[in-house]
Image (tube, rainbow, N blue to C red; front, top):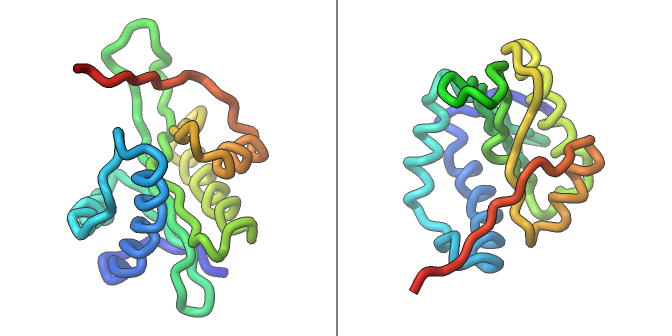
Length: 155
């Protein structure tokens, strides 16, 4: 298994993985997500070209089997929030045929090491309430619930 920086030449494989997770999210929460589309290509390319963003992928036997994105955020506006740098994981995706094989853990470990190098004091991420497998994975890594996002339709 190789963990390496993603490049724009990886876009087709990244898009394939993104569609897997996008389909799950759309199926479970169509009130919040749209069906996967090629519009994600531009979004991923922008993320790949953002020098402030971590974008790593996992590759085995020339096959991309997962990726992670993250940024370092620092509160400078809200007086009652921490001012220390925080690593915010944007996306973690492991191919649906490769889950529970340790790939997600390897990507998160690399992200954590990067975050430490950037001076971050903690990692944060959002996981959807319907994604029980992801919640169990993050629990095993030591993540704890900090807040809940609530919603309701209007009209």
